Length: 78
Image 1 (cartoon, rainbow, N blue to C red):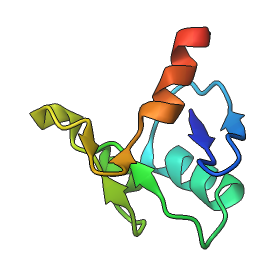
Image 2 (image 1 turned 90 degrees about the vertical axis):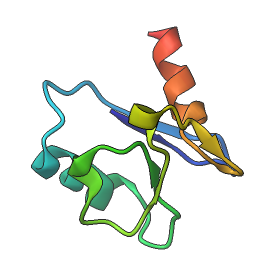
Image 3 (image 1 turned 30 degrees about the vertical axis):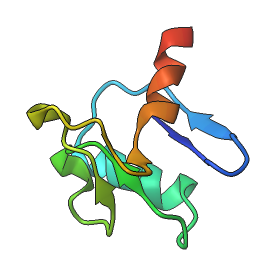
Image 4 (image 1 turned 45 degrees about the horizontal axis):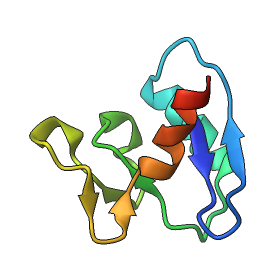
């Protein structure tokens, strides 16, 4: 699980056993600044947050500046 600051390139990542709503919510609350624009994939685990979404399940991976490519590229390094 991870987050990336687009302006600085700083990455926050941790290994998790699952991606439950509770776990995702705890990560966002503890590691994402409240004023940040949250951009996620379509995971329902983020549904309680004000966010921009790219819906991978329908083939959407980018919409203008809305995408998750920066953090997803990190998984290729692991």
